Length: 464
Image 1 (cartoon, one colour):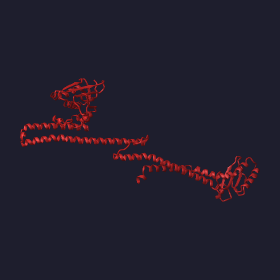
Image 2: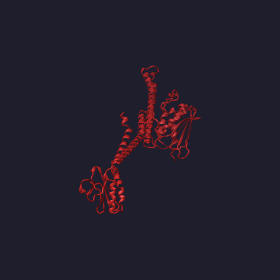
Image 3: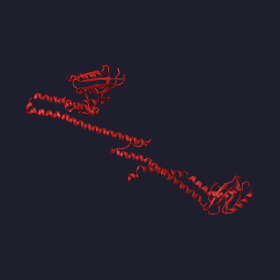
Image 4: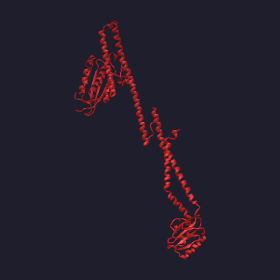
């Protein structure tokens, strides 16, 4: 209930109404003098209207004619008192109950104070209204009569109050519409952000071209970024769980096998009594484990950004040939043919150790998955001087199931687990390739072709 009473709508509406009231009060105070003058004019108007025939009747008349006309006027309007004063101060005509005490100032007179030289009627002051009217012939008429009954003034005040009330009502309705238009989108944003905090599905905001629309769009962009980041973190956590689970299995199995060998030698059971033979086997297994641990650490360093590439000019052909030389023994044992079509002068920008490691794992994987007496082709493509260098490595006669093509870069993935164990393949080679090339920001892909499996990567050009 508290939120509804003191919510954004109530606050905007209240502040707008308060501003409206303040404006009305200030306007009324500012025009109060003008309102007072209007009411005074309205109060004078009836008395002035009565004397209008007198004003016009004595214009350009002699004094005697003025006295005669004034007497006739007074007989017709006995309820008023007046005095006609010449320019030199001489009283030309004065009613019986009118008293003139000298030159009166323009405006209202203070009744009963002779020091002010005033003109006033004989009736009580609260029932008299006095006014002075100068004429064009230099004469001045001092008038006194019963004040108006206040009907006109009261009607004027009522109209003023009604106008102010109408203005207030219109302003309050406008304030309500304004508050609703402001509060509704803000409440929608608040509602959406509450759902966003709970990671609930939220629809994109309605397009608006103002600051509120920009705010809603920015909040939704942050929500999308947060959701993507959470999904990425979850994926990373899932990959880490898979990685550590697979790593634990890869480490545990050889260790258990080595323990069995050591225990058999200790107990001199059967053939295990031939200690030198099985100690060499244990050393071989430990070397394999040491290599596996090194590869795991390489993946960790490549993932957390510990290893930073150092780009320099390299001769692509020389790097490829040096890698092939390291695997020459395996190539010869499988009686394979490796054809290289990369000129020595072809250069690129790359981190040499990282590039060598990636090419070594790619070529080794090609050798291991190419049948005996098979052929491996390595070539390049370069459209112009500044274009990237694309290197292709094709192992003919091989094929990877399309459904699992993207899985070969996952740690510990083996397409043929039984055969892979026999040749001591850890399943980390292509995972290290992916991490290394991602670290250097290079594009690459592994694809099935009509001739076999082809891997390609693009290297930044280094012309000259």
